[in-house]
Amino acid sequence: MKEPSHQLVQVVYCSSATEELTREKVESLLQISQKRNEKLGITGMLLCAGRSFLQVIEGEKKNVEKLISSIEKDDRHRNITIIIREPIPERSFGEWTMGYADLKEVDFDTIVGINDFFMQDEPFARIDQGRAKKLLNLFKQGQWRDRISNNIHQEGFACRYRLNADFSPAIAEKPPANISYSFAFQPIVSTAECCIFSYEALLRGTNEESAIDVIKKIPSTERPIFHQENCVLALHWAAYRGLTTRLNLNVLPSVISSSPSAIPSSLEAAERFHIFPKQIILEILESEVIRSLRDLSAALRDYRSTGLLFAIDDFGAGYAGLNLLAEFQPDFLKLDLRLVRDIEKKGPKQAIIRGIRRTCIDLGIEIIAEGVETENEFRWLHDEGIRLFQGHLFAKPALEKLQSSFYGPV
Image 1 (cartoon, helix red, strand yellow):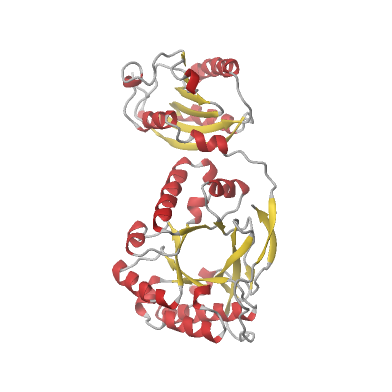
Image 2 (tube, rainbow, N blue to C red):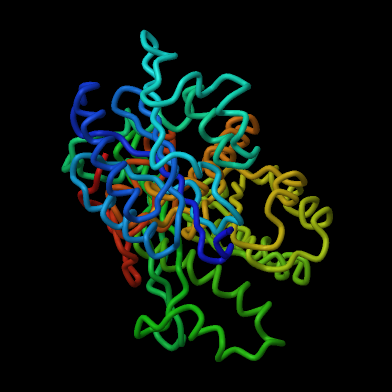
């Protein structure tokens, strides 16, 4: 009799051992796990290649979750990355409390307890053609295992991030004190040069209220002009603090479309404050509905001749996504912080970011990882070739100040 489908779940994860494991040690661990799994009603498959492991676990949800929790606390392996965690209608490995294959090149076809697992007959052919089987084949071909095996680092390496002073200092008097809002500035760092690459201007209340709290006080009919004016104020504060690097300004697509003077007013203010257009990176918020991608793209392209740089902000969180990228190729693409969060242990996020990075390489676009809060998030992203970072791991936003020196990982 089949178990109710809602009780069955399947988890596929990969990890790397903290030390080399002999075949004897692996077989001993396998025997222990097979006895335990039999009691818990757990079935699945374990693949091993050097220090890298990929395991499929299936069974009743409470038992699988209990086992995964135990695995995550086991200090014999690290870089635990969940690739699949979902309900299943039936087991794919119902015959095995834990099948096992050692994929060492010199011992590629030797299977403990199961013969010819990867041949297109018995028993591999009996497994349904679902995602678990595809992942087992990918692991055999080298995917997942190469990265997790190499992603073991000594922690604690840091450098002092400083200003490179790429541009002559901007100049301005102190902004008026009677304005009800202000800006905090958060550094964006380049780990390749161990320097501050840019600052993002973040709207705040004068008592550090959030941008949402500030904007909700502005009548909707007045918001386009408000957004236009706050870009000018951000430039003013940056100039007053002697900006010598780049500055990221957030711009709503609707403001660009509805207010032809939005970008020109920022360019005029920049000239007044001795800030070059090539110092300014306009971040187009992808989280807002864009009525016409083609019209927006055409408007932005017209301003490239001024020297302005462009970024798509919060990529992966909004409405336009790949369609916007297909119409308009920015200089930078900022990963949405929800993609970044816990990236080191979220297999689907990892696959998505690798795909985005490959696309950006092909198009000559630099990726900025924003919202980076932990060393593990940073290490994983850095290993994938990302070199521009923003987040509390490096520096928090500072109200009306440009931080010029701080320590961070490298």
